[in-house]
Image (cartoon, rainbow, N blue to C red; front, side, top):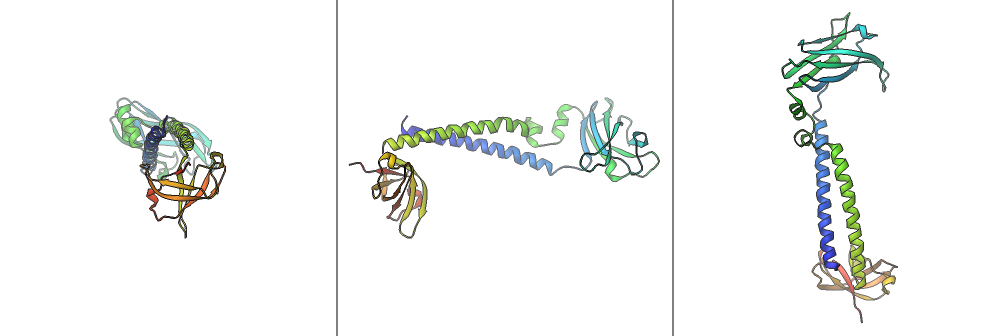
Length: 263
C-alpha cells in the first residue's frame, strides 16, 4: 500500500476514533448530569410493582416490632423485612419492601416511618414514591436521558465503546507503523516535533543511522502537499530518530515531513 493510501486510512481511523471518544464523553456527561438531579428520599416504581427500601431506625426503636409505616394511600404499603447493622457507620437500620397495588393510580405517595410509641416523624424517614403507570413510563421518568429514551446505559457504553476505541487505536497504531516504514524506504519521514530556537527551528523525525542518515546531511522540508518549502541540516542522528535544524524562517504549519537528497 502506498504512503498516500496509508495516510488516508490513518486519517479515517483517526476520525472514527474521535467519534467514539465523543460518544463516550456524551454518555459520561449524561450520566453525571443525572446525578445532580438526585432528590433526597425519593424513589421510583410503577403500578403493580415493588421497591426495596432501606432507612435508619427511629431514635427509640430497637426491633422490627417497634416500627410503623404510614402511607397516604392503602394501595401503597411498606412491609418491613429485617433490622440490621449498617456497614459504614454501624447504625441500626431497617429494610423493607414497598408494594404498589395494581389498583393504585400513577402519581406521588408519601411514606412515613416512625416508632410505634412516638407520633413524631424524623424528616430522614419521610419518603416520596413516584409511581408510574407501566415499565416504559417508569424508565422514562428518571435517570440519564440516553438511558430513558434510547436504552443506552453507562455500562452498555463501557462494554461497547471502550473495546471499540481500543481496537481502533491499535489499528491506527499499526497503520502509522506501516506508513513510517513506507516513507523511510523512500528516504522520507513525517516530522513529529517542531520547536523554535534562537537560531532556526529544531525538528524531530523518524529517520536515523539505520536508514543511512549522517550528521550534517541536508534534508528537504516538505509541506502537507509534498512540495519543498525549505531545508534542514541533521544535528543529532539517532538509530531510528534524528534531530535537525531548519535555518529558513517558516511557519510551523508548513513543516510536515522531510526528504533525503539522494545523490
